[in-house]
Amino acid sequence: MGLWDTLKTHAGAQLLDVLEWTDDSPNTLVYRFPIFQKAIQDGGKLVVREGQAGVFIAEGKLSDVFGPGTYELSTRTKPIMAFFESIKYGLNMPYKGDVYFVSTKQITDQKWGTQNPIPIRDADLGVVRIRGFGNFSFRISDPAVFMRELVGTAGLFTTEEITGQLKRKLVSALADTIGESKIPLLDLVAHYMDFGDALRQRLNGWFQANYGITLTDFVVENISVPPEVEKMMDKRSSMALAGDMNAYTQFQAANALEEAAKRPGGGGGGTFMDAGLGLAMGNAMGNTLGRAQQAPAGTFAPQAGLTGGGPPPLPGGAKFHYNGAGGQGEFDAQAIAGFVVANRGAQHLVWQAGWPGWKPWSEAADISRLVPPAPPPVPGGAPYHYAGPEGGNVVLSTGEIAARVRAQPGRHLVWKEGMPGWVEANTVPEIASLLGGGGPPPLP
Image 1 (cartoon, one colour):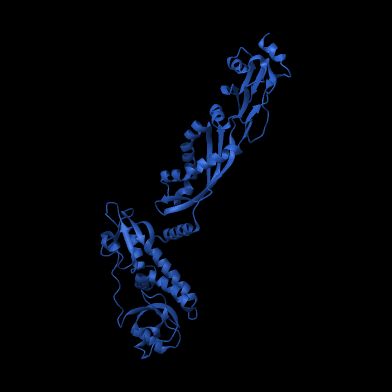
Image 2 (image 1 turned 30 degrees about the horizontal axis):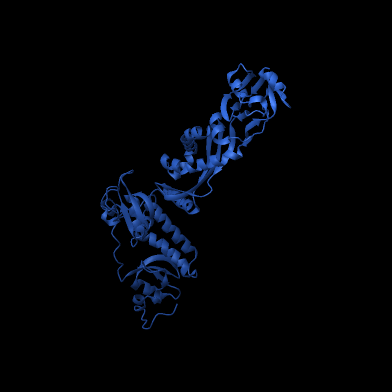
């Protein structure tokens, strides 16, 4: 009795003349055709549609892979015959072979995102924690590898069973790709497409070799940073609009003075403390602003002293790594000089490649020559920042402040570098002595 006659007489066997898969489910990747206790008719057809592949498994081993097309199921076809040879001797058991249909169409709109922030090192902002999200697409490009590495003996395999692993692999490569791209975070939004292509090319070889999958698209919709870094980026944008660091420092000082002017007199120590912070930033700018106001209309009063006896550095000149009251990052000499002028009493350290260690700003010639000397004491006693009943914030000597206190009753506040905040003028010993106060200052 021939093979096909034997199959037809097998107890309970059903004849299958067409093997095909017409399921249109968008999430099914692998489907095992049900042939348990069924016989495949000699001369039958295997129909593999576009976007599919047919895989024959014989005796637990992959026999052959068929692309789109129609194939005759005949013992004259070598891979088909190898499949039928997997039948148990004497036909006492059902087939040991299996037929799988694998979807090779593109699986689109798969979401990815970072569950936790990823720390990266940025040239401008230092170490920053970022988050990102977007979507990706993939297709099964090597059904044999996919079956061996992922499916095994599963009768049904869906996208949910593989996308979780794909997402974890994609996110793990996110930080590496950003770091190797050398694209600053401030400019990354303009390179989302390039960044997505770079990450796709980076991972495609690994996906194909280990999963039999090709990553067809990777889209970055957003890369975000913590709120405090966003504020820093906003300040950097404001600084860019101001033109340079010196102009930005003046801009900050002017804002502080304007806020204090809106709340004169009864605003309390906190109000004047705000003003004091602004004045501290603009300490060296006071005389410069005054000269600018006195300049004729249509002219610009130069910033005296900032040139330090020589021209400023050319644009694009050498930069220094900076760590101090102005923040952290890489700045040119003129920007660091602005930090120093804004807060002379604070620490300002700099470093360049080739130096054995960090140095104070004063030991860097390119910076020190741009920093003007500290203003001389105001005649008539030690200078203080002064705010009185008539408003305004000016630098006066102790004698001038005492004269204003005697001339007009009200609240007279003073502050200078090193003091924690604004205080009543008559509580300062050197001013109280000029007012004739012989006793202790009043209790707060």
